[in-house]
Image 1 (tube, helix red, strand yellow):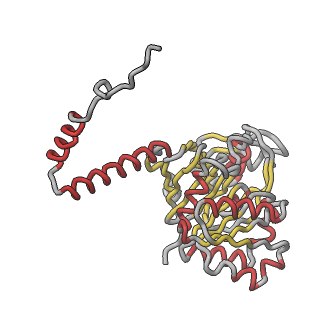
Image 2 (cartoon, rainbow, N blue to C red):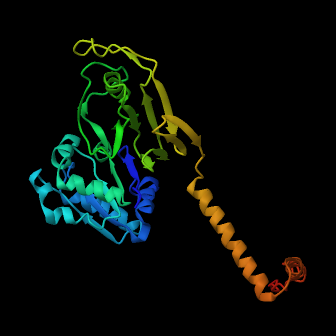
Length: 325
């Protein structure tokens, strides 16, 4: 059994109209046959957050949506709760407090069950905090800003489903360039990945990343970085030179293992997809009509033209006489 795919969503994904990111998650999880487990532990909201995602996933055709919400680290050891992940085809972790999510889930039987689901082929993803926890290092908290500074953020342990990287979210919208660079400055071996809102970094085969959604995914590669992070004091600006920056809009493909850009395919807008599908349906109907008449396409076209030529024009139609009185 091959491993599944991973969905790191940058937060604020569309839930009402386009829903392109969540639609892609559902398709990856099996579509109408999906069984999705929602883990809302990071959220401060109650059952409301589960009901929101249940409504969205149901509207997208999913018949089974189950909630698994440990309210403490001890509850993540509950075998009955953990067993709800046994036949999940999709696991979705909501946004909220990412340190809470890490504290309650990592290193527990529930965390192990998420790993097992992924390795048997399930899609595992999350939004905001639920995206950050997918990597082995996650940002627990930190400040925004475009300049990398010492002590700009705090790291915690993630699930480690994507090794060797750190994921940040709400990236462009909350100006988190500086804090992602500060982490790479302190640990150049880590690949920094920043995901914009309503955007997903979809990882397949463990290393092939594809961008889906409205925004972009920013990748910071510090393999050849020069930095003074080991000597900088307190909140001083950091030297950050020689890193490779990739800004990847929707349709971009990137190899995380080799840290190289692969290709970009411009996504087809949904309206154009619907137009093409309608045109294909018209062609299929035309083919059925031709087949039912047992005539060649050329003869069928001539028959249509003759029918139009012999159809009475509007001018030839009788008109009602009006009494001048």
